[in-house]
Image (cartoon, rainbow, N blue to C red; front, side):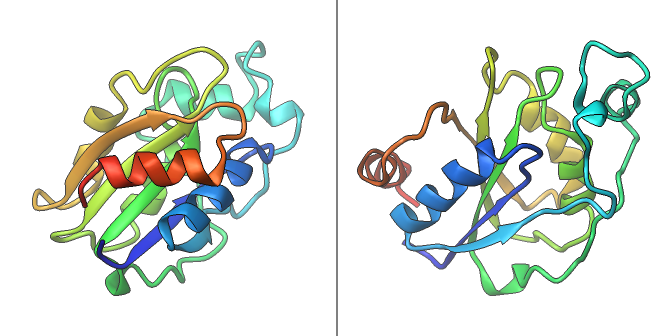
Length: 160
């Protein structure tokens, strides 16, 4: 396998736990995508149309600011990109991350955590944020706390 990075956004810690196991399973480095302004519990209230997450997700051009832009993307061939599913797609902060780096000729493997949906049209919504030469692989939803061994099997099945 090529040199890999697990980059993830996690608002509540659920995706972070999966990302850590995936990094161990893939022998990959780990990078947390952090918003400049952390999300509060109120920000994440999807039932409130005026909550921060609702406002961001209702505007597909929204690009929340990142806390930093120091991921060494150039050092990696494969990036596992993880996030919670929000409104059936990746949160717009993931677009902020993708648009902050050069993913020319990189392979991005998506993974997500979700309360009930699959990856849906996520890859389609993320593709405009990267180079046309970037390969995006629709990975899978990794709910619960998948074991390192189960994640090793999944990574091996990808033939990277």
